[in-house]
Length: 307
Image 1 (cartoon, helix red, strand yellow):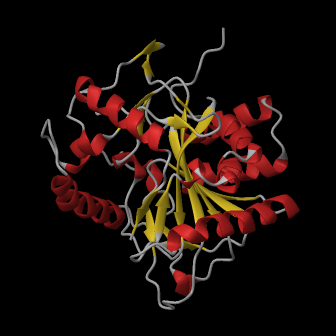
Image 2 (tube, helix red, strand yellow):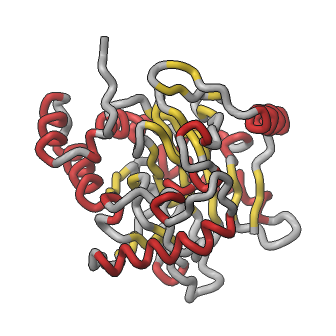
Image 3 (cartoon, one colour):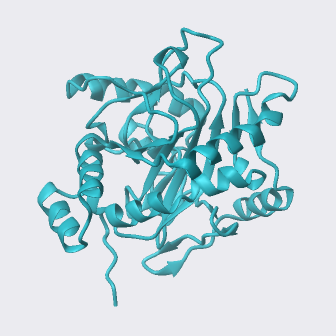
């Protein structure tokens, strides 16, 4: 019986990671990506070939009607439900093969976000929004659908920040059993910037070319730079991944104990089916509100558009 790791290999010490990569016969390229991810919390993987570039163009065309809806639409969540190209890019075998190698568990994509322009979002950690038990079995993949220029609002991040304390409400000083979004907004940025200053972390910017993808660790502090060229697009696809055999939850709306988690019922984009959360190999029942919302969302099958 295979024993699943309780800490992702890429989040263990470097010697343990190197031993794992050697045992798995990892290629030199995959070894480089894994070591970059281990060190910085972000690594670039090149997916460029004729098929990928064609899918980038197809995804752009399939999403254009969403951006033309009334209002200033910039972000489309779960376009994979309607766009075959987005679904294929989000489940690219080269990405899932690497994640399986780096984390030691079976990955599955559970959410996509497509952007027309740069988000200009403040630095944050995904752990606050998507988390797993065992910890750190979550990651993001940012795929450029076109060449990215800094004046369009590029991805910003703090290399090494993924190794800092997890950005969960208790680590931000939030001790309520029912924290609110306001609690997070007040404490999150303050805690993050204090940690950045304390550890002397420096800002970096990612500028991938069309067809390149940046993979980042769950706790990496990241966001978007300001757009100084307001008309320049930054078409991109962000895919969030969980790993099988974990409990999935939302820390920002969870209590301070494991029994008060806001348990998630994520979709597996590759199949369209739910991936049931579990703890210690046993299924965990989400709250009835979560079940009802998941059923309703599944029936509608419509992506969600945001400004």
